[in-house]
Length: 346
Ligand code: NAP
Ligand code: ZN
Ligand code: ZN
Image 1 (cartoon, rainbow, N blue to C red):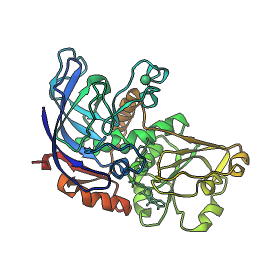
Image 2 (image 1 turned 90 degrees about the vertical axis):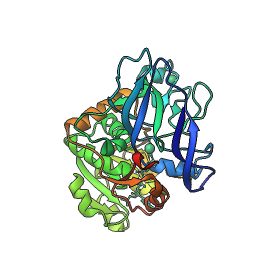
Image 3 (image 1 turned 120 degrees about the horizontal axis):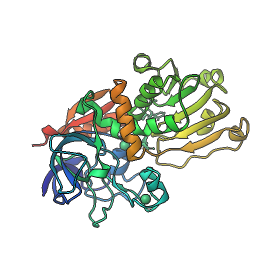
Image 4 (image 1 turned 180 degrees about the horizontal axis):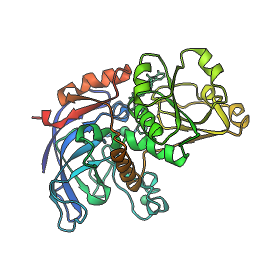
């Protein structure tokens, strides 16, 4: 079927109108009329081919919400009219250890990413900056009625990317959690960690968002541009989640961990980082990483957000403003996620 979207034709080129083909829904597929799509910093990394391997033309977008408009003959979980979402992947091998443990994001045979990937039929996947998508029902999420579809969209990547490590490293009452970077994924971390009952500190590269930080649920807010922050908070945190998309010195932050504390990296800068042994061995500290979350956990996160009235803080834009939005994200000028109103695609 013909689909309208916005694509980058080559690395770093501005996005513009693009029409392309998607498969007709098969027996297990559903067709979704996309209403909203969040802009993740990953879209910018991929359009810029910063991690290598980008495929063009590229229609980015993996924070998708919309309404089911058609279902395949064997679909059992969804019906026409349902409010649904699609996150960062649309398929996986379904038989490796990771897939069997509901951790499809770590599929050892490679998950099929929502865009910039290759589907099982060999076609290149295209994402949510478009008006329709066809996805196997097993890789589709249900959006709770209490969350509007526009502010729900960023939960599909930003929400799960922070929920998963917060759960895995047991953030909760009595735990001191720091979130580095109050951006799209970072602000979801503040909200979720606060709802889980942890003490939450934001470490931001300026004090510009201090008031917001408190409103979002942070107990404390410090700027990392002041060297005194690193003195004051030495050895303080049980868990630090680093969401920063740019190069920062991880060693400085490891020193802020308490005995047995963990720093979990979720931000993925373009360049490699060097880590010294001393900050790790002194304090038996751990350095780890985490990638989005599986389908089961993503549904749990959505239900948790529905129950706790959590959604993303968004700035809704027409798709024609996507290139401007990219520039503003790079300048840390977004509070806190741009979401594209797909109705603007005409
Ligand atoms: P974002 O909205 O641009 O947020 C990044 C934040 O990092 C900024 O708001 C800023 O926060 C901080 N920052 C930016 N430049 C900085 C600099 N030069 N020095 C220090 N801090 C800086 O991006 P996002 O969408 O949240 O994504 C963040 C990163 O996570 C990206 O690399 C993205 O690819 C990655 N990501 C990973 C996963 C995963 O599964 N692991 C999932 C989604 C995204 P302050 O202004 O508060 O300092
Ligand atoms: Zn993302
Ligand atoms: Zn697998």
